Length: 205
Length: 218
Image (cartoon, rainbow over all chains, first blue to last red; front, side, top):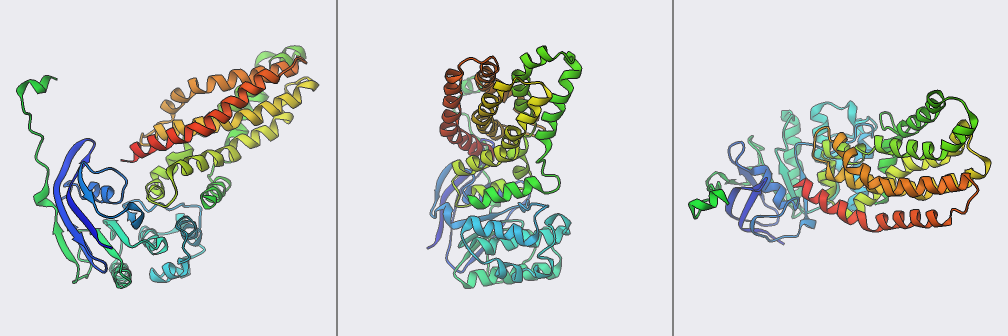
């Protein structure tokens, strides 16, 4: 199983933002996406995760293989840490809650309502959900927001463990995760050109 | 799917979940009507079926924007959309959870509230029956409206405007069934129409809701 992206073009609100993207991700590898703000990294990740259709091109892996994590963690503030993870475990049909709690040092917090967690703890819980899903491709959008240095190291370790099991990770981030083995892919050169009008009259059509 | 239903029910009954919201609103309407129209028993008995149905409908409407908006705000809708659950299943479960937390309590409480409006004795069975058959349609149609307006900030007003016309057939046949029951007439025909509407929307609308939700999540 390999994630191959060929000649992908993505659009946000009907306007093309990135085009001609091609890359491949082999099992056990991570790819870090870089590019300035607003270039379309989030749109690209949402397209790969199957939340929106691509404008053109092909994503060579089914969306059932992906799990997506974005700025919002999808936590319910009145459910406890453990209940939040148990819910996702039931949805994805796995039983890796204990592993996820251990991976992000959430065991002491397991009975605390998610609403009472700090921003960094919420983020850790959001990332712990990735382990619970048991899916091979992690599609991550700025995963380290509001994490401290120790938690970033924890996250790095979780990624390594996932890669060691033959998983893949596609990460849009601006900071150094300490993953020396990860390849870096700059999306900057793939910025879509503004649509050319063939005919002046088309402006008025 | 069961996990999603259990989660939604658990969220509804915990603090801030809005479980009692519809029921209290229903109670307020029913208690205030006699003050507004006067305590004359004959008049109250005549308008009671309509008032009960209107109260139930408005109580339903009040909680519609919670069905999907909360999940959208905290990002769990995106995560659910990428989960193995089919989108049609997600919206159906959401509608079911809404009915269990809003519609069903109204059905159960309606005999008590009928008493407050001096509902005639023979009207209780058709009244409860009409609400039991009709309120699921309100939840399913409401979920469709919620799916249409999910990305909008403060979409509640637009949601009400979109959903109200779709509620009209349910209201007409539901209130007609209860009124006929109150007057001791046969109520089979409006009951069948009401059941037809409910089964129709339960069978078809989840597909529409799922498609608009997919578009809205882009």
